[in-house]
Length: 106
Length: 194
Image 1 (spheres, each protein chain N blue to C red):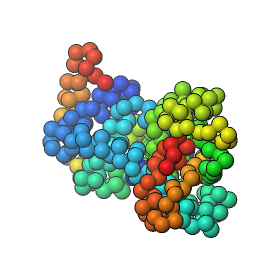
Image 2 (cartoon, rainbow over the protein chains, first blue to last red):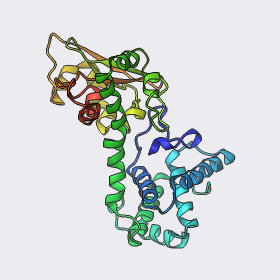
Image 3 (tube, helix red, strand yellow):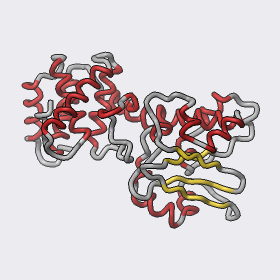
Image 4 (cartoon, each protein chain N blue to C red):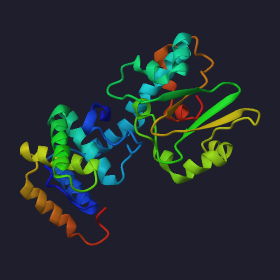
C-alpha cells in the first residue's frame, strides 16, 4: 500500500506526518489506490506521475513542499493522459462546485 | 504537472470534482474510496505488527531478539517498503504496562501499525496520557491495577515504540496465525488488552 512508495515519492511519514491534513487528501489517496486496484492503471504507473510531479516542483523551487498537492497533480495528469478525466470537463465541474451556494463545499 | 498549484480550498474542489466525474463514469464509488482508507487504517497496517507480536509469543528466541533490537528483528519479516529507523519494543508483563504516545506530533511506527488512529494525534490524548495515564486508559476501557507500574513512552522521529502485549492464556496451544488475528492495533499502542 502506501509503503510501496519509497524515496522521494514517499509520503511525509518519516517525521510522523503520515496523517491527512485535510479530508480531500484522504479522498485523493483513496481514489488513487482504488482506481489502481480496479485495474485502470498500475501502481508503478501512478508512481511515475508522482515522481514527475515532485520533480517538477523541485525544478521550479517555489513554494513549500506539500505532498498531497503533488499527489493530486499526479492523479489529475494520469487521468487526463488516460483520457478518463479531460481538463475541459474537469474545469467545468470545478466551476460548478465553486458556484454552489455557500455551505455546500467541504 | 507542476503547473497545478492551487490554494487548499481549490484543491479540495478539484479532488471532489475528479471524484464526482469518476463516479459519473462508473469507474469509482464513494464506498471504494472509503474502503481503501479504512483498509489501510485498520487492517493492512496493524496486521504487520500483529504478526510480529504473535511470533514473539510463540518463539522465545525471536522475542529476545525483538526486545534487544526491534528494527533488526522486524526486518526478518521483510514487510514491503516499511522500514522503521529505530523501533523499540516494550513488553507488558504482570508488573508493567506500557503505553505509547507522541507528545510533540504524531510519530508512530507506521511500518508495523499503518496509519495512526485519529485520537493518537489528538492534543487531549497527547497531553493527558502523560499527566493521568490511568484515567485515560480507563476511558479506553482498560483498568490497570494500582500496584502495576505504568510506563508512558514518548515517540519521536528517531525512535518509535511498539507495545508487546501480554499473551492470552491459550498462547501455547493456539497457532501463530490464530494469535496474530487477535492482536489489535490498540493493544500494540497500549490502550487495549488482548
